[in-house]
Length: 161
Image (cartoon, rainbow, N blue to C red; front, top):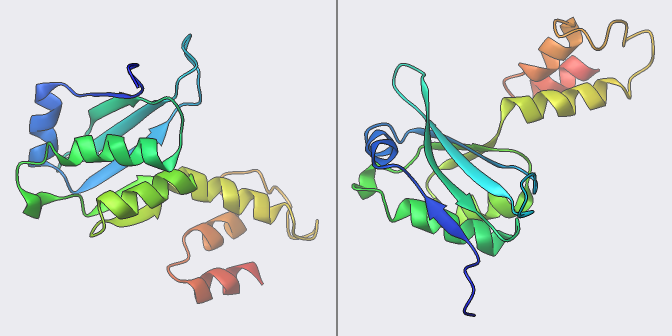
């Protein structure tokens, strides 16, 4: 078509940081919170000192897999060294984004962001019997920690039951 649909943009300094520190990326998009009703897709990286930096942004016509694939392909085209691709990419539980990450960065480990995992654990705790859920909303609730910090599926299940 003759209309601009999606646009990706990044500052040159951000791209320099990205090519120096590509190991971990976090990706998320707002949901049409601007006057154009377009999602803003944000990509954030981490330096070796755990400082965050904005890698790039994309205005997308919608949050479909094809739009995310296009935005991620733009990002990948800016990688100077193919051996320096992200090792870990954190997202929310958006299936379209997770699928796009798997297609464009197949060697990167795609993981769900800790905040989204905590929200899911909190919703599962609410399903438990009342006597187990005492002070369930407290961030230091022991059950929340045992479940959230479980290193494997078996430990997760043991923490729940």
